[in-house]
Image (cartoon, rainbow, N blue to C red; front, side, top):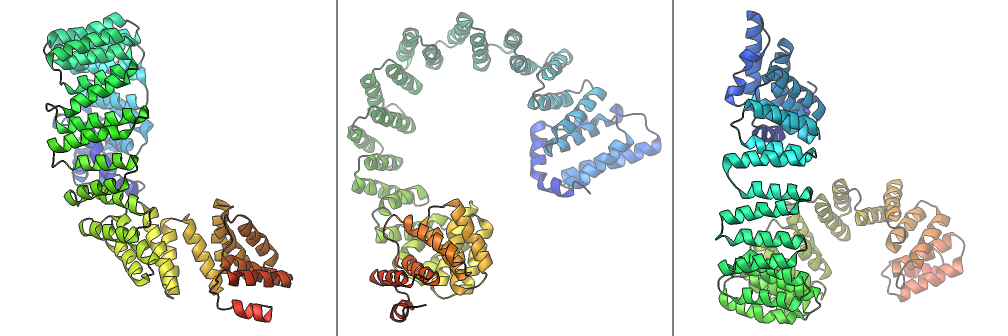
Length: 581
């Protein structure tokens, strides 16, 4: 069956599509007896059997079977609108839009008055940008169903999409006569009149809704905002003042006044408006936090000292002593003020009150990691994992700290525990866990386990450059799978052609393959691109390459430099003493 696999994969999509589209209400399904062609009794029995088997299979989520049964039904009666709609729905979900459109069009052809089929055809036609077709469908539906007033709204949108703006307004006017003045209709008419450059008519629409709701400051603020967008600040202020007389603490009015002051280059007045609102007692705390964020934004834009905001936080802490969201915001503000200790205290308060939110721990780590405060990182990640065992970042940081502290077994156990318990939404992150496990196992002498871990890492992220580098280097040290090592290392230097570590690895792999001249070129590039003095390991490699290419004196020089830099190579002393590999 050609579609079996695809349909199973898209089962959920089909269910959603069915729910959204309102496919085949009971009355629509029942119409198959009257919309199909005249069939013989035998064909009718077969049709009924296949059609209802299809509906049952669909209800059970067996979409591949359902599609087959609908096809059998269609083969018996190609004029049945219900079957055509069902087939169109399947093809729509499978993203074969033009095929779906053809089925929907045939369904409407054979059942012209069916409201649901027409609506589905209109929806898909709109998706395919068939603007005139959409207009035609809604116009036809309105003649069939004049009492369905909402069709005027759909038709208005169709007219607007088709560039027929006045017709769109006329449709909205018809809808308004039926349902009365509403914000949605009014705002759409405002938009359409504005597009027609009939500004007076546009603003009259908003006046109409203000007249209907004279005690509601919302529409006055809306009118002011619209005048501000039209660069008519004086008229905007007049409406804001009217709104202020009704409710001076109306939240959107405060924000609008701030916008007004900013647009008129009166930043001190904008800050004053926000300060007054934040320190007042009438607004909800969430609104105050929104205003506080805006206030901080203005201070940053004006390059003002953020310490001006500290007194506002103190006042808010008095008003809302248990709202730890304030601590999180204040911590970030103190961080911008370079008060790391104060920020750490605020983030600590937040995490104690919200142990199940990773944000607080992450902010503390943001402070501790640059300072290399390993004990703090260990303390925070250990505490975080008590409450958030599914968060991979805390295993990673804890494992990294243990590695730096040379607690290799603990580090390995931490990464392995992370793989077992953490929830990975990004395969690249999971790949990094396998990478760390590979590195640690190789360091601990478990070489085969290390290589298996690298394979798992690359399966999740084939472009994991550190894994490609380490895996290829360790293979070269083991003198095994050198062709594979050369291929993997080659990927890294193509990605980062000036990375000295990757260049050294590639050079060393070539050395082990016996390509000494090429190895010399790449290791010399590694030395050239090193920002600081090359590592002892790179210098020893360079000495080995020089020896193989016949420059024995210079090779000895590089080996001695490597020893001076504290190389822990077990063979370096012998090379120097014997003057050869």
